[in-house]
Image 1: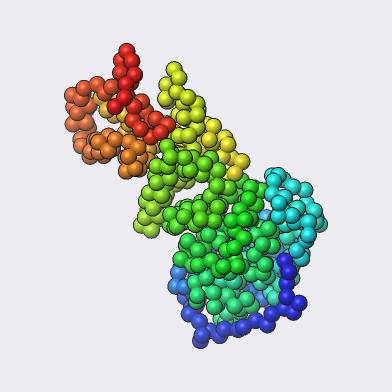
Image 2: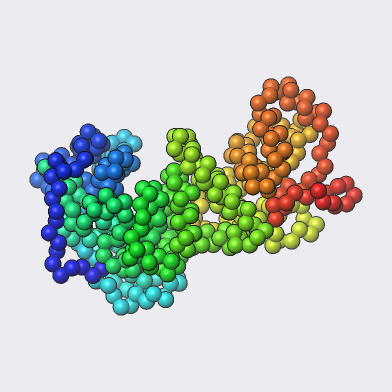
Length: 461
C-alpha cells in the first residue's frame, strides 16, 4: 500500500467529547485491557466495537490492539491461546467469550507492478514475496503478515476508516488517525489507502464493504465503491472455506436481504454462487430468485426475533435455482423425478465446493431437505404422516411454504400440511384414510410447474 510520506498526527477525542462508557464494554475486555496496561503495555479497544458503541449498538465482539507481542500476551493470561499463520493472534478465553488481542503491525509493502489486474485465474498462486513474516501472491493478496510495528503504522492495516478508531484504556479517549469519527457520524464506509491496492491485498474486503453497508445502513464512499465490480473476479482466488465463513456473516446476521441486493449490484454474487446466478438470469428459474429474497427476509426476521437460524436452510434457498436448472439439463426421459432431483443436488453441491465450500454437516441435511419436497405431494394413506416425524420436516415444510408463495407449489398443498400439523393424531389418521388416493404427481418439475402422471400414461394438470 502507498503510505503518506509523513505519518499522520492523530486526533485525540477526550472522554467528554464521545459517547463510549466503560459500562457498555465487556467486563472481560476490560480485564484484558487493564492487565496489559498494568504490565506496562499500550492497550486499546479497536475496530468494530468502537464504531458500534459510538452508534449505540451492542458489539458482538471486543477486539484489543497492543504493542505486546503474542508470546508476551500469552505469558500474561493463562487462558490465552495463540492462533493463525496468516495473522498471528492471541485469543484470551473467558468461558464462551473470546477477546482477540492483536499486536500492532507494520504497514504492508508498497504496491508492486507485478500485480496485474488481468491475472485473476488460479487457485493457489506461488508467493512472489515470501519471508518468515510476510508473503503476497501475484495478485497482491496478503498470504502472511506478521511484521510488528507501532500504532501509527497499525492503523494503515485497518480496512475502513470507520473501523480504524482506537479507544485508549489509559484515559478513555479515542485516537483517530484517519478521520474515522467523521465517517461514523456520516454513516459512510471509506477504505483507508488506495482502494484497488487494498482489495488486491484481501479481496474479502469487497464483501466486508457490502456487509457493513447492509448491517449499519451505511453508504459506500464513491472512490471505495468504484473498483468493486471490476475486481469482483479476485474472489475466485480466495479459499472457499473462508468464503463460507463470510457468507454466514452476510446472510445470517439479520441483514441478509440487504446483503444479497448489494452483492448483486456490485457483481459479487456471481463469484460466490455462479450456478445460482446463471439460473436466476433464465426465465424458467427466475422464481427461485424471488424465493431466495423471501427466504432471506424471513431469516432476517428470525434473527431479529432472536430465533435460531441454520446454514442448512440458507444454502437450500441459495442453491435451489441451480438445482432446478441442473435437473432440467438431465432431461426427464424414463428416470423418475426423484432420481433426477437427487442427481441434480449432488451435481450442484459438488460444483459449489470450489467457490463457497459447504461443510458436510450442512450439505447433507440440505440435500435431505430438498429431497423431502416430493413427499409433500402424498397426502393419502397412513404412511404419508410419517413425514411429520422426519427430523428435517420443519425446515422442509418452511421451504414448501416459500415455493407456494412464489407459485411454484400448489397453495392448497401448503395449506393442507399447515392444517394437518394442528389436529390430534386420531383425526390425522382419519383424514388421510378417508382421502382418495392422490394421483402420482410429479414431485418437482425443473420449471417449477406441477405435472401429473396418470396410470397408463402421462398428462398435465
